[in-house]
Image (cartoon, rainbow, N blue to C red; front, side):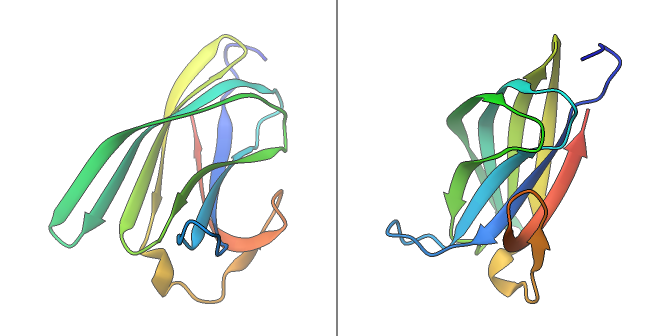
Length: 126
């Protein structure tokens, strides 16, 4: 990866009920041409009206190939949610943020390319 190349990722929130009681799985997708050396989900923020909260997360992924995806978070989708990641690839390091609406309200979810499940997706690059 050239230092001038941008790191491109998506996060897809897919509705998947599981034993943890949460209804949404968040997948990190590498849309770049080079593998991600690492990705760290370091903060999760929630907002409901004028109220918000955030907390530190410590989810790490190494060696995510181009076009590959990996589960990085589970949630119930009742709040507006922002996932903040620190991503490294080819000697570059960027901070990427992915903002999601109240997911439980979303209808007619589209098939997410690269994941093969229906969901809501957000893209970022840096």
